[in-house]
Image (tube, rainbow, N blue to C red; front, side, top):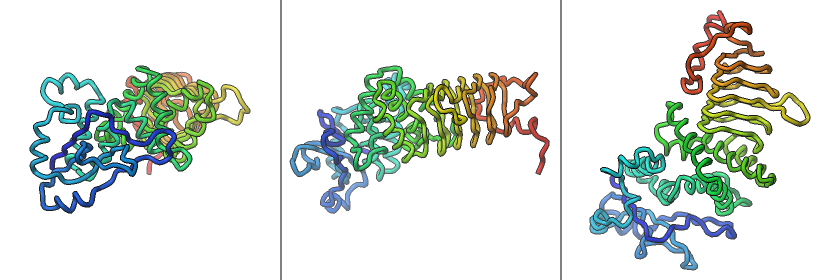
Length: 367
């Protein structure tokens, strides 16, 4: 099957303005489907002037999902008006090899060719957008919206922050995407991560909430935190500071307190708490260094520092400082090799994702 995508010269609105509470929805034209039921199985998402669906006010256009006739398919294959929506090939492919957004668009087109039923989803989520930031703002808005927080309003909030923060925030988003793709063997593509990995999406929503918190827009930041907790099962206080290249693997049950800090290139599994000890206020949460791996079900409590390149074994309870490049495991956690001369790691644990090699050194328990 072949995915065919066309677009007009004007931008396609994915929803009404922020003042409107109801987003535009994709529709299937039953008359098209019936009329072309015996034609080619090629799939087309088309918003051109002659076939676009229109709302009751005849003002907004949005794509239709239908089977085109053969002449339309032949004509489309010769069009060059919208090369950005077609497969990138030749010299352009080499130039775009380092562009993660271009790679994502390639992946989206390939996926939609293989699964035409997903073509509208991929079009509205990725292919209709001009930038990763726009697509991310839209995807988060769709995921986190409810009857009181319409998609358009949330999109404006997310896109404003993602755009205003410029390349720094964009680099962090891309570093997170690469981290998931490189470290999680279950991730088959960047698009797979972008659309379906709630750990990645929770971190990006937190980046926006943190910036709002920093600007003293605390009420809005806390609402976003609450929606992320409800939708993704990840509770990160908007005051927490998170570096780039961070992987939340599975992510369910991850909690980070207000004064927690997470460095660059950190990998955290599900059920991890970076919490306090009951102190009423002040700096009361953990500080996680660069390249740290924190295993599933771990609690790191209090204003303790976990040094760069350290590893925390699954199910551990950490109450004291963990030196750089060491392994702590157990409840309460203790260092592999002993406190006086702990065993030093020679590889970055957040990259290797090795959660078991220390077990033999820590315990002689055998089933």
